Amino acid sequence: MSYSLQLYTLRNAIQEDLPGTIRKVADIGFTQVEPYNFVATAQELGEALRENGMTAPSGHAPLLSQDQDRIFTAARELGITTVIEPFIPADRWQSAEDVQATAAQLNEAAKKGAGYGIRVGYHNHQWELESRIEGRTALEYFADLLDPELVLEVDTYWVAVGGQDPVDILGKLGTRVKFIHIKDGPLTTNTKAQLPAGQGKVAVLDVIAAAKSLEVGVVEFDDYDGDIFEGINESLSFLTASGEGIKA
Image 1 (cartoon, helix red, strand yellow):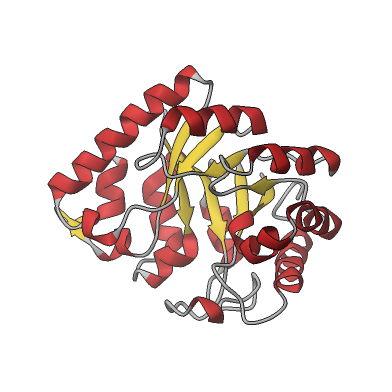
Image 2 (cartoon, one colour):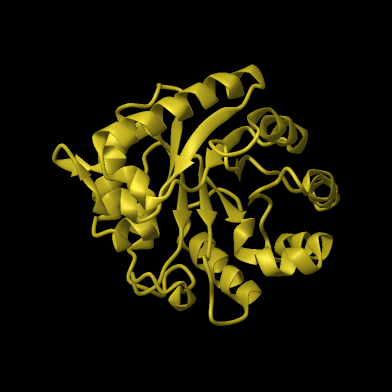
């Protein structure tokens, strides 16, 4: 298992200076990143990653609302091997029919992605855990509808905000979980209150240990009331000091 950084964390810095931001991420010690909405920036981002010896094993892109061929083409250019749908709004998680429809759409996206040699995944927020379908969380119900090749990236912080124990949920979702988002804080929807890993209410190391088929642990802040580069540095320092990861 290794560590990556979700570049959405640094969206403001990237907008001002993409190459310089990637260089700072490399200087902190990350060798991997998880890009977001990467179609528009694929060329510049690819150059920055190559210059800093970095890779992008996964990336976020709106597969269910934008041109999938363009997304998979850009992903292949960047070396991204897993493209993750990052956001399906809360109103789509309230009924079995809607969850079934979303699963069917992602299954179709996965078939297209396979033609590019790319795997498809899904990333949750809190509402997939707050909603219950047939006695289970909507996320669990959804997972059972996915084709075997689809994977999950469990945002462990939003699982906890949604009222569930991330360790328990990771156990229930099992080997389908190949990525997790690692973040910490007071477990509220106030994203500015998020904290570096190990400084909040999430039992981060227990969460990592519960993901038995984990390939990459992705550090992320949705927002931060401080110097964001210091925040990600503190998160990576905590994780590498724990010995839980192989490389950053």
